[in-house]
Length: 482
Ligand code: BG6
Image (cartoon, rainbow, N blue to C red; front, side):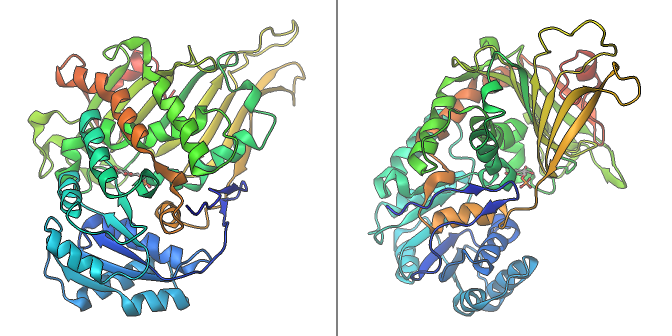
């Protein structure tokens, strides 16, 4: 199988690798008339085709809606325009792309779609999980072209058992290396830069362990509300939408041992070890998790209705819009270090970062005054920035200690996060995709918390949209905003 080295982390986004160009291949999008395709996938394809890592791509769209070719063409053109995508490969892809109305749960119609493909085919399931499973079932009755790749969005299954079952089904179609369970956070350039930061420097790696680290937080607070996504979100909630997938993936990159190479095999082995060792802090899902839901409020000039009153929401489901859980990676290196994962919607400020808080210096020489703050390393995932907060003395009173920051700004990656994961698919490099065993483990890690919440053992708190979260969370301490 072709191996593309996963990434060269340059500190200024990611650099391209491997040979460019090559034979024509096909990206077949199932669910092409849906929101994901228009908002994220097609812009990602456009950006990829426009850069020097582009491929000669036949782009085929399929959906239930009876769209005309003109309507599809406009959708693709508009999406490419958002990326200012130009160049020969873009023009060619636009000239050849087509849309076919089809029922993707019908083997005959899938066969008809696959007959249009040229070269290796990547089938992107931009579909709800239940329909994806039905489409895979239907594909078992179709002879797939050689080197077919299956590309699946989160959520992969709805719990550990269904994810394991879906794994069995997809492995009847193609080998594991051809299954791309994508997580676009793994394509974000700063997330990828965690590898370079940790493993291409001598300075930090020796102190990233339980001797020196007091705690870690991975926070993804958004100022966006539900954004008309009730159909999906109300059945998921913040824990499944963000923590079960994206934040656990970031955690694996922050805590894994150094892989010998950046090939998919080594990288995914290292990540899998971490997930296998991860469990809810103190095995206490009630004491180690919190949940809340936003009520009506204002974010800047925007007025937001309360989540429970939003169209499409069933308030009785008690879906949380802010979730927090603390876990432990139970290895020699990390045992005893609490790692808090938190994500919420409709909060006052965007806060998207990992924060590593170090233990205090073992002893402060007599003579210093002022109170040293714990050293903290902030790794921002938008704005893409690294900030190291340290204690220094002076200026002014030379013995007075003050916190200061060393700041590194990262330029944007060459590709969008979606473009980056798509590059992996088209290059047949699953390094940035989630392996089957890890997809199951991510569900296993959050399962005790989901069970406790379902049994109402953890209160569903509330916070006004545009606030920093429930007031009570601040008062009881441990607030990662602090
Ligand atoms: C998606 C979640 O996967 O990631 C959304 O479903 C979330 O709820 C989004 O807003 C955040 O990703 P990004 O790339 O917009 O920062």
